[in-house]
Length: 379
Image (cartoon, rainbow, N blue to C red):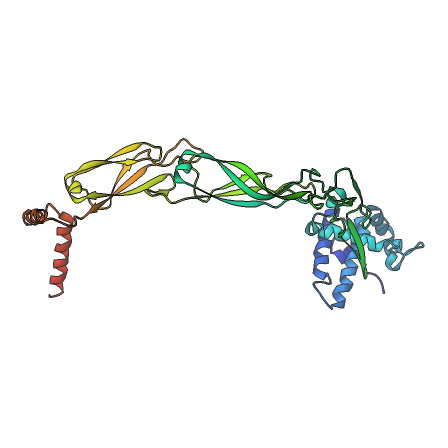
């Protein structure tokens, strides 16, 4: 049976460049891969065809020979198997799979051997601070349980005075190759975990890991105006990497404890202050503390209503990494008198008798509307 043209198999023109060939191959190899088409003999045949075509055309010398002589370029000469491929075809197909799947298998050749390193894990630490600390900014000391580099072996994992030797399983490559039917597959060496070398004697203090469990004391700078839920990253303060690998990062998650007086909304603060009914009616003033350690005077206007707010400009929170400062809003809750004496009750009754609609315009207007609604309902 006549063999199909390699360019036709890959669905590309004869002038296609290397990138176009590779893209076409990737698409078809994924489409016909046996794992995606279990039990499909036709798909398996197509998969082998596109592999054969790409193997021939990706190499400039082979491609030039194919363009000149066609399939005859690969069917002449000794030592070649079916289809014109020699005994290195399995190895070539492995290289093809490295091109295709290298990104999904940890980066391929660039991570083999002694260059392989094992980065330590990132850590999270939850830190609760007071609203005063968030206002002023603080440097806080924290103790973080972590894996730290072993001092005895300086993180290498090897016993002091001993060294490292090439791994006997992978012969220093960090990868082992196994044949599975038609293909040859590379995997990370199980003996050295991809490092390509093994230690002669492990460190007795860390059992060859190059790190051990300890608690680290760290200083954390809390900036002025930091908000609840902010995350602070301390680079390389996470777990030490295995056998000299780079350390991970430490993430400090900030939460702000509830305050007895203030509630926060961004850069603004809110406080609720109960005032006497007489103060609300006649007017007055009072003082409230501020987060900066001072005091602020609040003026109560005559006839203040329950829930009315007074704004104290520039008495709120600083804005993170800015010169701006928020405001403080004081809400006045008017307190109704309780436990009245006879004299107090008599005075209030007298006040009720002489009060007019002008003294309580809101309530007078509301009940006037209610009366109108009742009259409209025929009651």
